[in-house]
Image 1: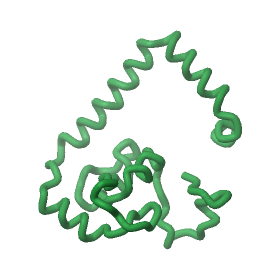
Image 2: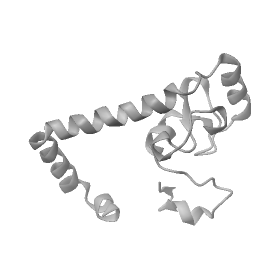
Image 3: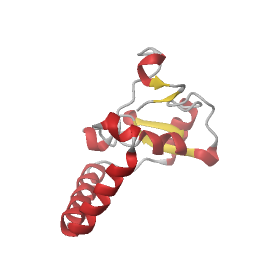
Image 4: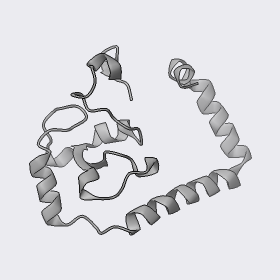
Length: 129
């Protein structure tokens, strides 16, 4: 299914749009439930302190997704194991990444480049999440 979507995303997007139009209560319930789960996970932990954030900046000089240098204007806080996949909102699960990389990663698990061959996570020169 995912491969077909990447080849021709238009029909899938149209089906999703029509489903959302026909079932607004189900779509609303899904979003409310998703947000409630995230708030429950994050709410159980403490907020990240300025000292912890400074330690993250010092540790993560490069984006762990693309390997380029991090710049303060484009930084974003990423959960290595997404909250939706059972990750925790703790210091050890955070990485500083580029906002663009974080958005493209979404809630997918990412194998670090040193753990796999590049051909395992790239296709045609780009990232394959």
